[in-house]
Length: 295
Image (cartoon, rainbow, N blue to C red):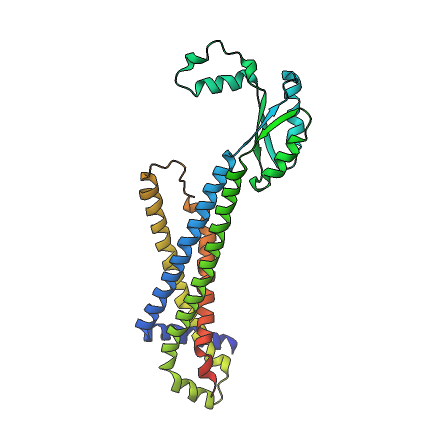
């Protein structure tokens, strides 16, 4: 009996989709449009977050060794520094290496002839695990015996943190708003198709049909529309993303602009699109038919 009912629900849902072709098409277009907007902003947020991560990895701390320490004593500080919380790694730079780098960064290196390497200090280039804790790490380094001075770009790190926070907040807000809008439009669109069948629903209620028996075909209809809309939006999103990353970003002069390969986010995005589409389809259908079940 349950098997027969399931077959009836699926059959009625499919028939309803084709019987109301224009409204079904409108519902699919709404789902596609909303998912594309949500997907685009989500992808933008992910790529900005990825670029910030890349920039963070280049935002380093310079720790200068006390001049009274020999090179061997200075090198011995590496293991001490790497044990400090939030320190990913520390690279020792000798006076000679620091001078060579400095001289090579200038076109006219002859002006540095006769300059002794002792004017430079031994130092460590330190990468952090989390730049939001840069100030704390700087304070810990300054209390480490043998470290005389620490250069940390605190304003840059705070800037990265603010950008990440703003992007994340705006993206979440837009996704929530667009989900609510798509749910509202979807339910009203299905409500129009339900209105055409209000007399049929009323008769079914009066002859004893349960609310769930009447409701399920509409839920199946919403699922079918959601599936078509979600898959269509996913295919379009892939095409748009590939076009933008290959044509636009590759032609810019900004080398710091990078894009995540779609293959990295393909499966999670498909799951999210289907989940959001199904939620909109099912909830929209339930909202649309709710009033017509009150006879």
